[in-house]
Image (cartoon, rainbow, N blue to C red; front, side, top):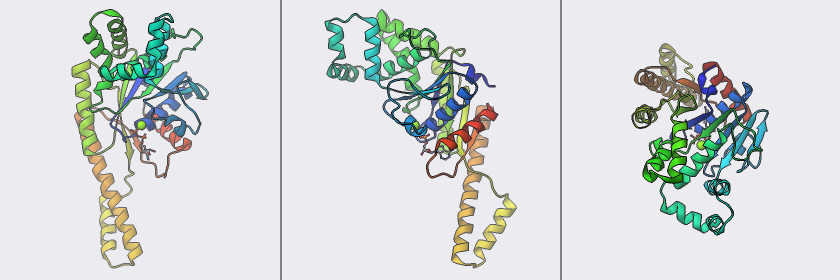
Length: 310
Ligand SMILES: Nc1ncnc2c1ncn2[C@@H]1O[C@H](COP(=O)(O)OP(=O)(O)O)[C@@H](O)[C@H]1O
Ligand SMILES: [Mg+2]
């Protein structure tokens, strides 16, 4: 078993649409099958987990989806509320800060504030000693990270606050979170990419930035939605000839569709090879599933694919 499952916190990163949520869910299934008490976190009201697991109402509370598998949707406003509740006594200040409009103002005036409280909540979930002493600890927290510009922003947030505040409770807390997420014994990073030119470039760039700016490694790269290579070049040529041989329009269309998919699969493999060279190691791969909408069975299938490669 790979050491990614031995971390306490794993960030699944990547641009929107590459399959981050899918990979986070599949990884959650792998971990929970391995007997880890696992929670998958989505961030900022994406609310897709419930859809993913075909259960209603994954919200701000830790929700059990299966044996050893939980999900939560992290809301920054609720997170700061919870944090303040444990930090300060119910005073006028506390009541004031609970005022939604004030939080909105505070968050708007402080860039990165939402990210900081979100990552603070994720960090809290990964601690053996939970803020709420009744809350049971998790073995593994998987974060379906928000897709930001270059992906680094979210992970760099605690460090930014630590350095900007320098002294005081915010700096101290942010420093603690930064130390945890940059400790390879505690935190792992999974980068998801599609086998296409831009996502491949972005993944290589992300790995470089993460090392340069945070001193962190990408523990696993997952290339998602890889099309099957159904034909070799000889077969493709035969199909091309058949398509040109004046058959029925229906047959011709089907052959052309097959050729189109063959070329895409071919290009994808070239991109996968390029990524392998640039990274100096082979990424994990997940197949493209020909389903109109991925369901629980699809995630289960993908999780088994991941499991054999981890
Ligand atoms: N391996 C796959 N095969 C087929 N469809 C996929 C695959 N991975 C993701 N998808 C689909 O692609 C879309 C984007 O995936 P998602 O995991 O939501 O991406 P992200 O979270 O990065 O935006 C979803 O509709 C999802 O069902
Ligand atoms: Mg998503």
